[in-house]
Length: 219
Image 1 (cartoon, one colour):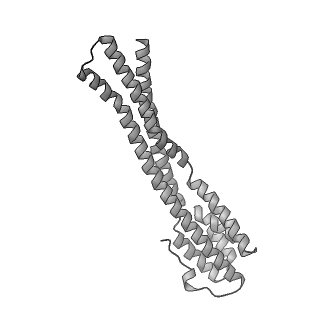
Image 2 (image 1 turned 45 degrees about the vertical axis):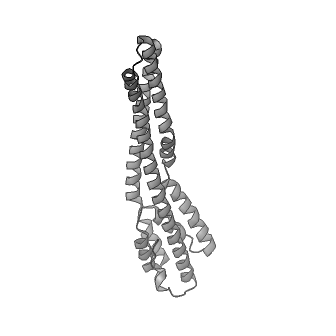
Image 3 (image 1 turned 90 degrees about the horizontal axis):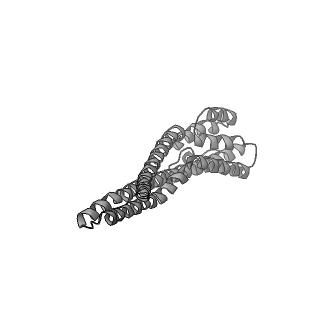
């Protein structure tokens, strides 16, 4: 009976672990959604806003305004504008580094979701195997091997696998959603940084701005 109790404990422990995994996934999803809502600025709006000052060559005012705007892209712009006195290449390198830094912030906790997506089915399978072992141990102890007895035990054991698959599917959906959204945000920041670099170079050379440079769209 001690062995059977251990196996039962393993099955229950498996479900507890999967429940914890599901709570972790949901917590990360909510935290990431909140983070994105509060830190992702409309790139087109910010670019057009900064363009008003750059067209007039007012770099200091642009730096002052962008420093007061929270979010990821404003930090990239702030980095680029602070290097206005350097070469265009130096500014682009600095903004690329800033974008990489913002990407790390965007990808925070994503490895946890991907890990849970991978291991959840195996955790569920582990619980199922423990449940099946218990079922056959009960059959051996009671001397009853009817289809009904075995089926009942196996069906209960498969609950762990089903739960594990559910957690894994949820984690995969969440991971792919955030991966796609992060890729789009980084593409917007890269595009915006390129436009800002070009505008600052025009200001340095006292050249007029083409109309299409003050706005952009990421397809």
